[in-house]
Amino acid sequence: MRTRTCSRTRTRFAVALAAVLLAATACGEDSEPDPMRDKQWALDALKLPEAWDEAKGDDTVIAVVDTGIDLDHPDLKGRLVAGHDFVDGDDEPKDMNGHGTHVSGIAAAHTDNGTGIAGGAPDAKIMPVRVLGAGGSGDNADITKGIVWAADHGADVINLSLGESGLMARLLKGGTLNDAITHAHDKGAVVVAAAGNEGTALQPYKVGTPVLVVGASDQDSKPADFSNFGAQQAVSAPGVGILSTLPTYKTRETLKNDSGYGELDGTSMAAPYVSAVAALLHQQDRTPDQIMTAIRSTAKNPDKLAKLGLGIVDAKAATASAKE
View 1 (tube, rainbow, N blue to C red):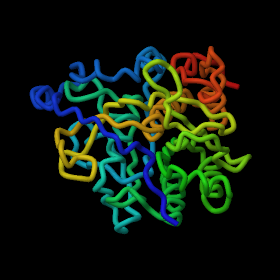
View 2 (spheres, rainbow, N blue to C red):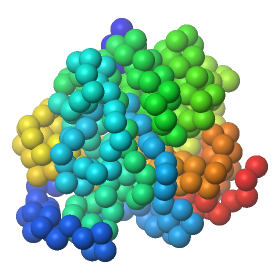
View 3 (cartoon, rainbow, N blue to C red):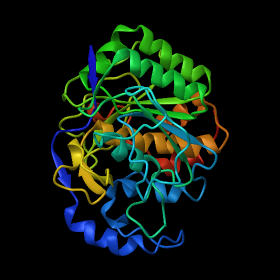
């Protein structure tokens, strides 16, 4: 059985921003604003800039178990720790799809470096673990190995923007994937998983598996129409029109745009924002259970919309909350 990435096929590329990117790349100073920051509505919706006054994810590693990463991207290079490629069986997890690069930038792109965008956890590191091929699909064995490898090699947060119904169905059934997530939790990592994009209600994991499921919200703080819902204690985060990094070479997601940036929709985009918040909380010396509790207990859902789960994540409130 194969698993696919969890982003929408509809893509809005930021071609018009490429000139801005190229003009700013030469600057490269850590004190310079990111030229595309004003396009990142999700950072403000999650109150991440306000949370950065408390923490930025220092000494935290976010493993992106996905399609790999553009290892030389100007907004990601220098953010990376050693990763692994379970598709090709080597230690060079180059992204031949684009999805993993996009997810990685959301989580922890360089911030205030005069280039491109800002990452959700500006001082965190990215561990790229490639388990999906160029077509965006992979098998259960590689995904399981990737989760375990990330946990055993020091990941503090593990992001799973995978699967649509593939990953979620296997989580529902239990088995080795649940065991891998539990192993990661027991090693001290927070596991964050995208809910999927079928727009249906489901319980996407075996009760008792320590995973934080994330659905997608839009610019109006409403549930995205494509987002799955119904997971126990799930939260939501922005997943519509999300600008992030893309490979600077031709891949499935960059056939018409190799500027290095573009917009995607999906719960795949929502999950790494929550992984970024988890990284901020990890810097505050919280355990995986304390991190999940903080994120869940401070999420906002004033209109009690069932499709938002517990609500939209509030990074400022989560970092300011007491340890429990």
